[in-house]
Image (cartoon, rainbow, N blue to C red; front, side, top):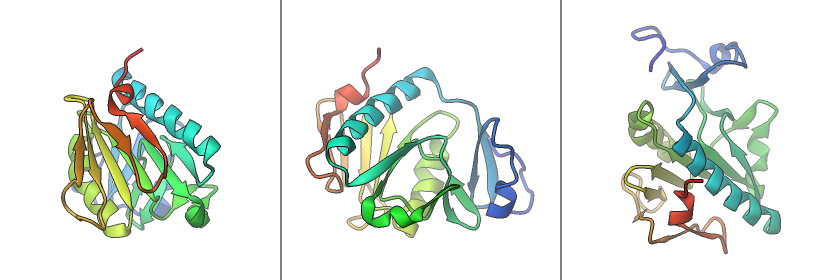
Length: 186
């Protein structure tokens, strides 16, 4: 939900003055959004994929993984908290004490009812424009992953995986995970 409807746009400087403890904030096109903690299935999906990415990056140290809440400063009016990001070693210079100051190479957004439209429209458009190489948009219901590689197609997914598929990425050579295991519930 937008915290200040019809108010003037906020900037990163104002965002940085928000309390560190408290709800999950995002600054999207100058509007401050607040969201409650994601539901349990969302967290299961995030944990399952994060574990696989952690194991991969441990044996293939080509980048570093972060999970929400983690601020990604993209412009003076855009600060996102993606569910998962990977910053490849060549781009580690974007990492600061505050988070990431620039687009990560690989981003995962898991859709939630309250943030669905922001992830599918606003944030996706900004990721494409600012140079995110790959975005996975995970839809818990119906259990799909839309894969965006913006250099190939800036508007549409290049693949949509279902639970029967294997998830891979050219950014992460040798990484693969069965999509069904991403959606596994404990």
